[in-house]
Length: 317
Image 1: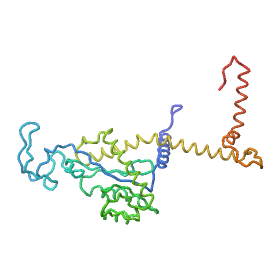
Image 2 (image 1 turned 180 degrees about the vertical axis):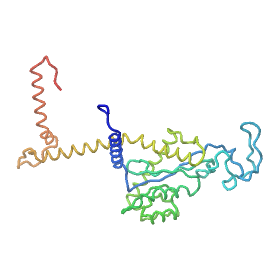
Image 3 (image 1 turned 120 degrees about the vertical axis):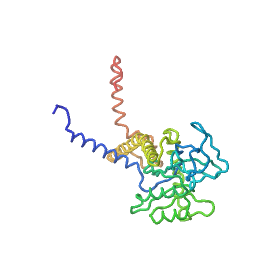
């Protein structure tokens, strides 16, 4: 073996140790009690011309590579029609008055401490997909001694969904509808409910980045498996982009806390400035902190006087 080289086992052990340390640092950033869930539509790589009846009826497409098609007189639905380009895509509209598109539905579970995505999945676009995916993602994190919270918008305000969360020991911080809400005063009167409703909106930042920066507004793949792989990879990339700054700020905070603890211990053994018993007012804070810095100021003054005695030499650092 060459001098200066490491055995393969040593390298693997160092890599495992580095990964273990990184997991510990990242784990400190994640909340294990408070989460938010939401879903978004991802347009499929298929056109409306490919949405044809399943029984093969209907007019054939026009001549040419991109032939014309007449949709008048048809009532397309997912029960009777299917895309010939991507059979897994479903016709879905985001809300009343919005256009219907062939799309998939992506779901994300975000922890509320730093807004990192802890779980995600992709399903077919249906009316119950968001609630079913939220239950699927929060279930592994609800198996703990204390209750966890799940924030969501009004689309999740359904009686069966709220009841299912309560049986899983999860507090439903779901936005309440004006009429007929399944979320009652047991939850909405709490201060934590208002906090969850504010923080849960940060999940829109995740979807905004995936569609604007990562190009996931319209997928380039076909099939539920491939589009799901792309969606999961995009969520992982979002976390990786945010982690360096979060880890740096977390390390700075921990370092400042350790320095502050050391300063407090040193200040406890240092004599505090003398106070006249006849003095009616407390000493000014500025004078107190300057007295703590007196030894450093004395050393700095000696250094300045030494440099002034030797004018040919610049001030030493």
